[in-house]
Length: 106
Image 1 (tube, one colour):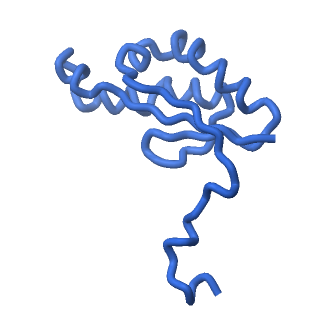
Image 2: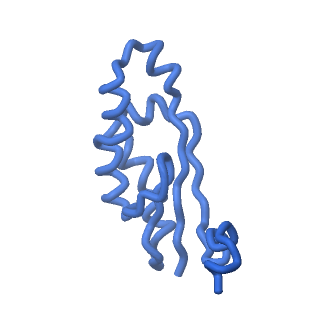
Image 3: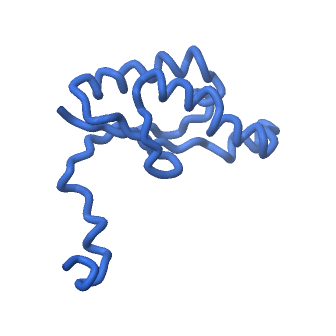
């Protein structure tokens, strides 16, 4: 089983050039885009522009469905997407504990 994530960038300069208001920009980040993610089992919001799947056998297959879901549910997101990456998340890749002092690790 594997866990996958997506990282994306939206073109906020193009949004501004098209006259979108701050609330319209926020709606692109939080609206139907999130519904499409949930339909494709990307349920973990790791940070601003990164979401992850659960650790399941069909995780990558679910991510592959995401572009078609987004084209249906959120064409504005598709219009302004600048980069959209898929990453495989490995347990060994979490080095958060290395940022803690030695006493916290003992």
